[in-house]
Image (tube, rainbow, N blue to C red):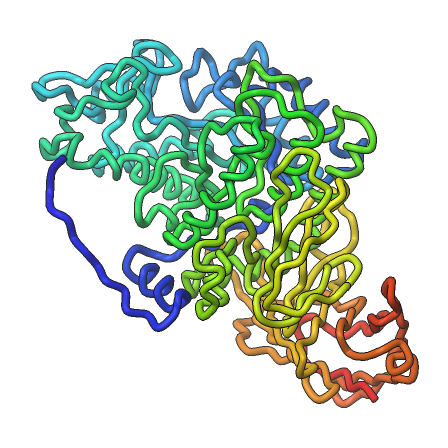
Length: 584
């Protein structure tokens, strides 16, 4: 309702170039900690420490991986943020230490509305230091109504407020917090239950007597910014912040999700174009509540949502306080096993996902991409949003209709391989494929090399020392390429390595292209080569690795449903080294 419009025109030659230009203007996605790319389990609310322990143990009992457990507003003392309800959470440090011992993390919700309670230290500080947004007269704090009841709203445009807020995350001020505790900023539009359009009055005054109408869209980003800096200051690690409200540039401060969706097939379907839009608008770290926030999903809807959610950049299950519990094992078999497999899919792909986030943080490209992003010359895909590319190497077709057992998949130009059976499709074409309950259509793109970790673990930290598998998926010219980004997964300024892989003229090559001293001892335990030849041709092959001047004969196995996949067993070459595997 005010101000001028600034118009920026990006003149990149293709979508990737435009994305980078936009990131250079507004900022690149912050490189997240690796744990935050695993699965997150959330609910409004896990009611007490015993509930937290039971849920955590439930994942282990049912052999389902997850990284982070979340607490919503009921964990606080009367919805006063930076506090704990000591009748329900009497030992929050001990609770977190229990999670930490297993390699897991916790997230608590902290909103920008502050309960007007004279016994609440944040409110007293804000009143005394003039940190609140003021009403239109400028003479007193703006008051509204939100979860705690009567509240005022911290003015994050005031540099003193930003500093105060950041300091609140220190261990001595946020009592009961530990180094595995991260933050969820909700209701930061800001949400005002009794306000016009459920938000703040437009004449409310911010720092410098700026009216709220002038800065409304920026408020949520300022909240996340203050939280991000507070975490960075106390941890000396990359922060993790989830925000509901955001603006151009919010990608510098963490992740976002699409808000309060419903347990309906239409909301599962709509989550895909919503997240694709976020990616091309410069905010790659985005997700939707798996299962739907409102309502109770049936078994099929929940399963299909997990199968798609495993490819959301931000992967979290969440539900409303009035919904039935829906932890992944509560529906019994076969649903527990099928959901377990969907979540494990995400963990198998973590090396690839982490590399995609490095690309987002350095090149501005989305993690979850519309087809036109990879195939800008294909007019067929210009408006297609019912399937997507996960990075440049994996095609995903969500199943979003109840009872569906088949799906119509469009394959762009090139060769595509079912990632379980390795059945090949030649594009461009549309094909009807099987989509039974146990899978959604997922395809490797010919010409790509994808790093994975195949061993089932309970979370990402436990996977750190695991060996890698390389899927070498060849194009029509029998070539492929890919890369992997390696660092410690958490430090702000970690040492790193980047390795590029290529396959051409019957030689698989690894070459380190960037090395700032990160030491990594992991090896490759398996190479899966798809599209190399027939059963007869593969059976006659031999291979030798060349690393550090040493030649070693490789063990080869012909595999796959059609016996047209060649597996190199235990090559034991380093993931971050210079080597070749030559095939004859």
